[in-house]
Image (cartoon, rainbow, N blue to C red):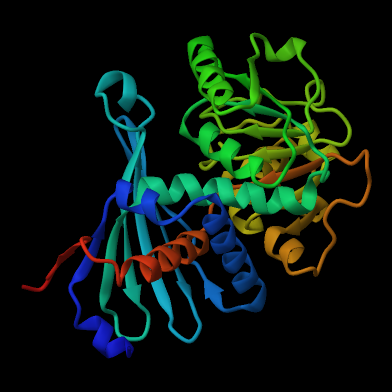
Length: 334
């Protein structure tokens, strides 16, 4: 079907439930690899993210084009309101993604952005871990037991022979609840009461909303892979600058991490400069630069999220959904 003919179709409306039924962790991993290989090849472009402060949170906008036989463009707007669950009974992240035909401008789909953000973030961590973590990694520490914790656990279990998971959260009840859910899935999971008194995991995922660093060399032992996921704005920080400086540091997008990731805080502290960054993820995925090279090496992935991940995931979801009956379609111009 031509792009013009596709543009004559009504726009697909895909809810979180629709998206969950269309793709799993392996599919999002495939989309993540597509995204970073496209960045390496120069067939994907993304402008800097947009941030709009609001009284109790912020709105974040990301966009990108993914070129190819059929180009796709996506624009995502997320509202991030950390107090929502307690104050309003609403999710922390809500929003929508608009997927367009890059050749005609036709609006192909409007999708829930929360599910895409959740899964593509965990997929980027898994993609980085596949090249930066030790293949035999069997223990996992997750810091921050919100939705990202579950998504990361699912994504990493598909790649590594995990035997044991440790869960830490400043809210001990959240860590305990997550540990129970993870244990019910068949993985031994233990809540960690005090992170300062605990040492040792093969893989560490930091996915909190912290505004001061809490994860340093005392907790991270030689040979560990660390995914720094929570710092997606300049005021958030999870990684002690000395750990960033000691590790083999990989950024998802260097320019972006320098202004809004944990790299931003390491630079401001004078612990390292941009020349100390080993690579961007697309350089690792494409083989231009090596991943892990030593058994005792600490590797760190600074993940701030790029619109190229969103458009690659949305394109995959749309391709699966467009021929399925029963999904909602609307005529936006009617």
